[in-house]
Length: 153
Image (cartoon, rainbow, N blue to C red; front, top):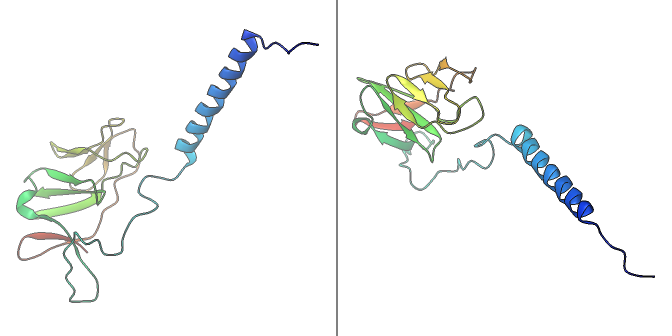
């Protein structure tokens, strides 16, 4: 009795099965796994923010109004928010695209744009102006102070 021989074909078939199983696992996780930003968000008073302290709730400093381009906006990646500005009106939306959870990349020509699949949202309302996204960006509550600071309410 000798040592059993493993054929080249068996090794290749085993490798193919392993690769297919790995790819299927990855696709399943991406499709059914947690949405980016839905777990593990730290809402316990980030030390980088400025607290108002007056009413018992901390307001998180987001930006100075003057730092937001008039007629445009800015993405705050760490906060997963996008701020838009039109004159004195400042608006805030979730920066997580409603299509597949990518972070939007910026604001241009009145649109908040997602780089992943080309979705675009109205900078004033968050409504979808170009798919594949079908749901609008979620509006977020903010406060603009008399000193021109934008705070997360």
